[in-house]
Image (cartoon, rainbow, N blue to C red):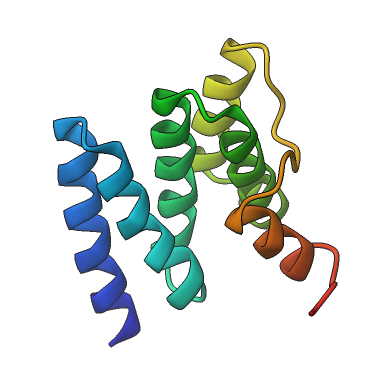
Length: 114
């Protein structure tokens, strides 16, 4: 059931991304990452966040999404695509800045809970 709900969020997010409505797309992908992180949609959601954040010039957020993707889904094509997008702009997938994704990074990867 959660995978189905996450898939719907992804479908809407992809539509917004294609239309250039990056903030609306980010909000949909964020729901997948925060509320449906155990579903099969999560790797793509993180990749789409990298795409959307780069489109807006928000490199810290894009790098952090890439870092989470690389830590959890390194062998996927989603990570390889995100890695290529980031390195193509002279960036690396690493936690940077202070955003909602940075708190996800701290909790999931570093084990730091409130």
